[in-house]
Length: 175
Image (tube, rainbow, N blue to C red; front, side, top):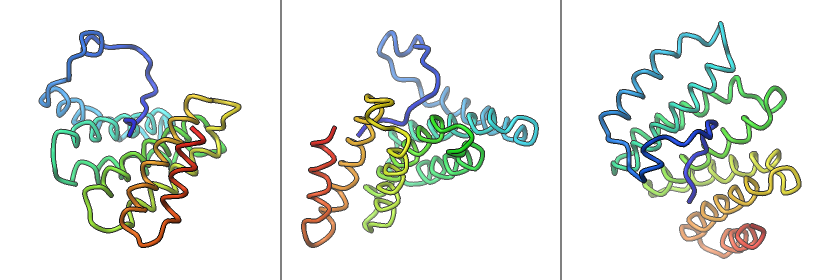
């Protein structure tokens, strides 16, 4: 599965050196982003970007833990971002946030025994594909199709029947 997408394309020193950021620095970044949440009324789109980035940081932290708490916080942050990053207002950011939400839900669903989170992940990826079209953004479209395929595969493994697995195959093939 692909990681959530960030809106910044600037490579950082850690990325250049292929290093993983230490947990303490990421925790400090999460605290800093949380402090910026009061800016929603003054700058709603910037606030939504902060929420998306907070979700990304929490998602990264969750990769180092086996629990669900950080993922649930990431899901909440992405959902908050979607309240300002609407499809009508900023369709590209909306689609990226939907993709990020789907990735967090899919990971969370993998850590749970039920299917509810996986079904939500599938719905989020399908929403993202409404804007992430093959013609408009082929790479994002392909990545979203792959993420959709992963979520459908895991969901299909938990259900009787083969309908979800067939859907997963179609999503993988399309990408």
